[in-house]
Image (cartoon, rainbow, N blue to C red; front, side, top):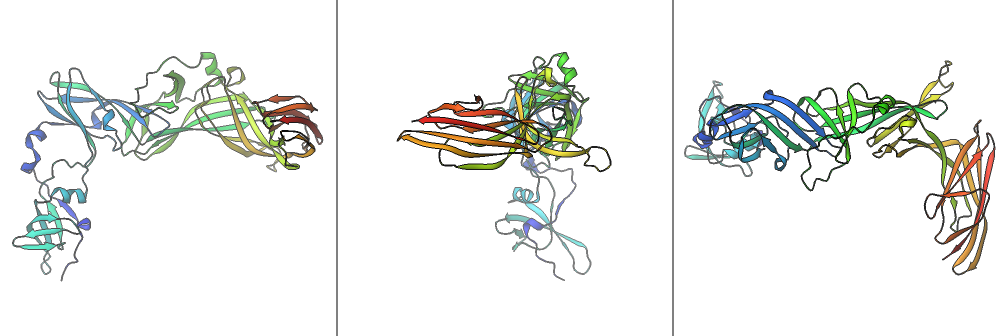
Length: 486
């Protein structure tokens, strides 16, 4: 019975076990190849950046033969950037190095066999025995073309077998280095390189107290290994901030401690993490315990935690104040609910915070129905890298019970280039406690304040804010009038 005709990409490939190697494999080079596998690794440090970049620094034990040899450093990621590799050992001289990324696949095995002789194995339709014929691969364009004796066949049925592995094909990527040793014998080979596929981010979880003036903060690191390599028992360092990759990235050198011992008591690291360290205008977070990060794995590790951090709750209306003509009425609008925390050791923090998402939870008194306070998700917002002494502001959404509306009280054209304008802004508070609100708005160029019912502050040249205290279950008003001259 006839067998179906097989396409080249669908042929089952059989690599026959044989100690013989084709003469095309350059036996002199292979005889001197020294495999350097992950089993010989003595130390490993991963320095991971926020931007899909990692610095791998490792030491592997290698037995160097006398004379020139070819080191095949295996178990390296396919995303390795070969131009960034640094190799070093006492007295070692590098002749050349390259990344062998031409990996063994059925298609590459066939392509490497063009013009070579392979074996075509077919099954006898009656006896079921294998029939082996030698065939020469003539072409793979649009299908396989084989020469079997004095005939040419296109995509013949059967399976292809190879008696040897073509030179240059490997099942996994390898870093190849042709070297002269300083002296023959065992030596520690230091390997440093940059690779893509490694990244990290910070995620924060915060619990707000019932008074909304203190919170407990926990930072988690989410590590992602998108490479095809396993990193076993690595010392981990996380670099906050981006580095310019147009030039070779420097190897991080850890500098002075960024926090004093008193600060550590306020923001105690989680058991697995050390303190943040300053390094070349960035911050490096070092893990105290070894980490295993397997290929394709994403894992979370505690970074640091802080308790009883002081926060300021702000009810803010942005845009309800508007000195430009044209809008007669604005609102009603709900206040934006913002939490502001200052990265200050006296307020419970005092450690550099990497950029990340902060998710805030808080109590909802009586919402559980069982007499105990339930937990509610209050909102989430991102923070930038926040060094000590700076503030982080978290927008949690809108406040249901605090609203404002504004109406134009005056608009008078004085000339083609000047006018006077005024508003009345009314803020209502349906809560059972007084609140302070911030009314913010943009003024036109060339403005001058003529009158106002409360003193304003300037956040910028044309951006003003007013702070009003609104009683429980009551309301408060702001009125102002400006003159604009252009």
